[in-house]
Image 1 (cartoon, rainbow over the protein chains, first blue to last red):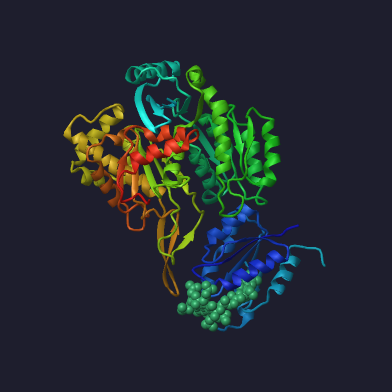
Image 2: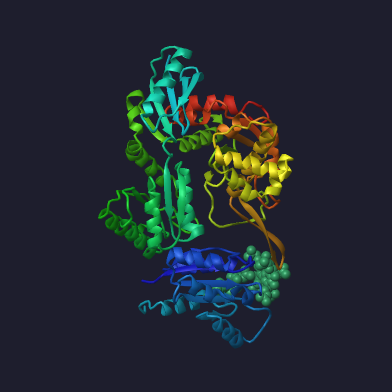
Length: 138
Length: 465
Ligand code: B12
């Protein structure tokens, strides 16, 4: 079963609470989580994904600089040989209140497979990831 | 009297120390040229004869040896990501007392395999992937290594899930296979103790034989370990203490040689400022690094290249021409002793530069990152700024004039973000006590500790008890 994920909060972002909740929730749901915590660089996500043979990278961004921090992550994954690895992003990924559809579009254009808006409960993310990784339906 | 004989087969000298185990006292020392290229027991016998003259005939209860003769223990390390399992493998090899000739990352290529064949290391350490993680690369590398020339042993210490497959492939080859637990079982978790034990066993069983060091076996009980590994054991014991006896706490040691510079630290090196964020692979409490490009003779040019001619001129007060003249002479005659006042000055400058560079590479670094709440400091590696005790060992430094100034200058060179010690109290290992006491620590740790404490911990300002 594909269940290995790398989790972390990107950039200079120190919001730690959501990260802890996601770590707990995904582990509880049967995933093997490599949690990198807060202030994680793109390179650290990628290196951890290589060593752990991860199926997905879950990026959080809360402090409003998500768009800048996430740019180029997909390209670097491609370069590092992480072919077709799933990229998710969630949290307060942009500054202020912007229409979610537009934000989603921009992040998808950057190569993210799924984009989650503020306050999405973990059950929703977990269900989505199980689906994307072809877990058998319960 | 119960006495122990401790033997250090160095690349140049075979050094003996005799210790009274009942009184924890050094009874005598002697040395003679190492004769590894012919029969190592010849040099040992000479040193023994000298010791006999000095202290009379003693029936030693135990005779232990370590060795860096015949090239020491040379290793090649291979891992997956450079900053993760590759680095972990390299740290493990250093921790086992090896000289790491080269470290590889990702898939080994045919060119790499040819190169490894040419290097023909004493041992190759194969790692890659955390447990349950990437197994593709380590399995590929095992397959490639199976085709490498030579018959050096391979130690597999990578992803658990890939171990049996790697083992199976390598068993079909000329390379004896050993296994050890993963050097990095989880992300950013180092586990180098077990693999260093395996390496030490191989050293004991195979390398000693392969290098002909067993010819001395009638004169001693066992060659236990490579010399740097003995030094590490000694420093660890001295730092930690034993039983109720408190150790000296954080320590750093430098061994400046003709070809390489070793740095040892026994210190956690956590951030001094609690708001500093620790990044990257956490480092081992007991850490050793070796700089293969920094040495007082064979690699004096390496020091020049790494630090820059201007700095050497500044440090020595000599002109560019004089410095390059001295370097030229050392290149042509690596056995040269400083003959003129200029060469003495050049040597001091080279020593300061080598210590500075080697410590900078060994110690961690701070980096300032700007965040919405202001600047935050990130630390990679160990913070050794608070480490106050430095032990210098190895021929080039223990007799140096003006050692305090050499060290003081060395510590002034790194920039403010480098986490090298800020100010140290320097002690010389004049009696080559460290390697001897490291050997003794496996047999009589209390004796070893009290001897070292008396020697290296004299000033009461550091003694915590
Ligand atoms: C606590 C807090 C802080 C604390 C953080 C303490 C800590 N170490 O954790 C401190 C005081 C340090 C702080 C600092 C700042 N903060 Co603040 N902070 C908050 C606050 C009040 C709560 C965050 C929190 O813990 N939420 C609870 C957790 C459970 O929710 P969550 O983080 O959103 O995570 C959940 C979901 O979003 C989702 N999720 C998150 N990531 C991902 C990823 C994926 C892939 C998926 C699927 C799901 C997912 O799942 C999580 C679990 O359910 C929020 C406001 C709010 N109510 O959200 C502001 C908030 C996030 N902060 C904000 C700001 C601006 C800052 C500062 C820049 C303020 C400043 N100028 O000083 C700094 C930035 C510091 C830095 N370098 O990161 C803004 C961000 C605005 C934006 N994005 O446009 C917010 C939204 C407040 C606001 N309304 O203005 N903050």
